[in-house]
Length: 438
Image 1 (cartoon, rainbow, N blue to C red):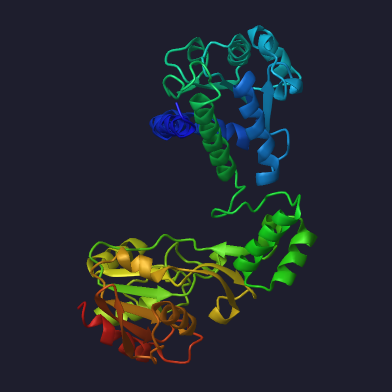
Image 2 (image 1 turned 180 degrees about the vertical axis):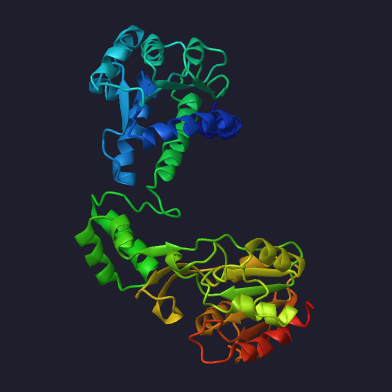
């Protein structure tokens, strides 16, 4: 067989692995969901294996501290034969069924810990002995094996079976079995780190700054998130020691509400960002009771600015409000998904935009929408910039074409009482838009 044919056949076998792992996702999910609460209580995850399986466990465990900023003792790889076996095969070490637990005892395991045995054959005595004793002592146990119905799978709480089939070189479990093990380990550890809060969005905000490349990566994360010059971002990073600490110090807020997108909505109303939670009278859009948006809506549709105000005079009737919006096809969101408040106010002028809403993507979820209404200067500016149109004047609109759909972008006066206009006059502007819904 030529070199090209060898490589092609090996690659063809490898291509089967991803689908095998995909079929094991329900088993992986069950294990991760069982591990998560234990790790959040301070528990640790131990990988136990021999040969290739043990090396992969040690590899995954050793990569987590620099990647996610977790201590070295949160995920620990244990290999039959000890660290020497990482470089030199110590094949007989895997036959000692009692040594696996003895190697774990060094770490004084507790019932909040998890032991994950890794063995392609599912018959390795060192691994079976370790998980069996761990389970007997109340630890959570799982395994990754490449054969069905093995002694190892029977010995644990959560078996993961990636049945990859015969290896290209018979018995060489460093090939497809090893690839499957690495993929599953990546899924387990990465999912846990994300659930533990070590990732923001898809960014490794708690990574250790161990070299120039990672310092540069962290600096660019901060530069992108905060909109500050590179030199300033680097200074902040080196002073704080991690991206996470810099962003927390900047007090970045993420939008607290899901988009309100009723089926068949024809109109999308966009503000800027909700006020701080301490100012809320309800967990919904325009939650500040002194904001007049829901009084304006009451005037426009019912001729009564108090229509949605609750009997206590301090809250809005939220269920009635949501039902009204849904029945009239009015969708709600804001133009910003993450912001920094530069002052302790609810004013748009004191907001620093960190991340904008993807308005075009939102409109794809609203196929019948033909009208966008922005309330206030900043919301109008951000929306017009994204849609590539001029900002309309208060009470007017501009037309915009989006993927073959013609929409109108209206600018309405701010519903904040700080905006110098009587509520009745504001309502008159909004009435022009709502005529299409009444």
